[in-house]
Length: 451
Image (cartoon, rainbow, N blue to C red):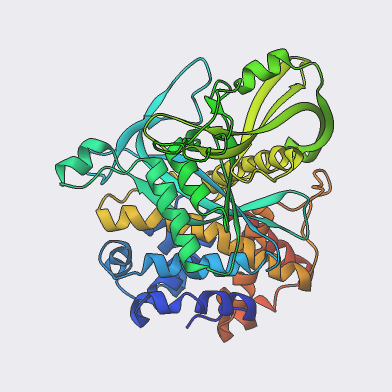
């Protein structure tokens, strides 16, 4: 076992049952190397970051991702348990489901496909790229050092193109299918918790909404809604002696867009908005049955919102919830928090080298991205626990942050590793203490920031 601080040692030991003992020791070396690596997160870059901690042949560490046995679902369960522990047990766990494309190149890369590029695409221009599409479920956690909620990834599922799965004789799973499977896994593994799941417009399929509605005792889905959806009133009570199949729906109602066009009275409310700001919006909200041919109707509450953006342009959006008793203000504010997962994706790319991978085998592809996003959550959880002990973070005189970000958490864990791991051997410890304290602290800080 590496020489680690108490908090970090306890967190890492909780993942040990998912590995064999030799593999777990190798994983710890790669993890330290991934934290200390300055840019790329290839295995070679991790070994360079781990330095003298590498005591085996380099091929041994390369095979950790591609050949050794992992229990990925057990790792996800342990990570989710650590993240859920930050949410009070009497409150629902708010999760976000979204997909992201990790750009990859190479003819032999497993599962690679042509997907929409979320970074370069706009409403008017669609850009495609080659890579992997991952369906990610993240839990929103309140941190003691910031007003913004942090989205901590806990489960990542690889979407594969339809032609690849058909070639292997497998049934094609869409992103919505993976979201449903991930949600079912959460409900099964954590039977005592209630969940609020937030998704964007790609996850407002009636099939998924209907499935979430069937588990409404523990799961509520909030997302963007169709402005021209076919809505109906509840069916009229069945008359005595009436024959035939019971009606599933009543008369056709106006769509949210039609209701908004005819509405004369709007409710004004101040809601929490993007960028930790507040905003005044106007809304109308009603309950109805959403119905499509071939499916059962599902009861929802929809909210049509009007507001002006920073350029004083009128904007209209429509949201919904499978919990018809949820307050319209809560529906709006829940959906706004969805953007935190986009921040997580961006920080994982910038600071954890999410798109610098070079592996191509099936096992390595299925493990590397979940491992890096899991490392993001692990660092955030460690920083959350350490903050209660030492609620400070380093700032520069010319650029002072009001709140810590993930880069500060990464610097903090690097400092912890430098003190307790890299300078733990007696020959290193004696040498480092010969340096004057002011110069020593300066060098350690610069090393942690440059790593």
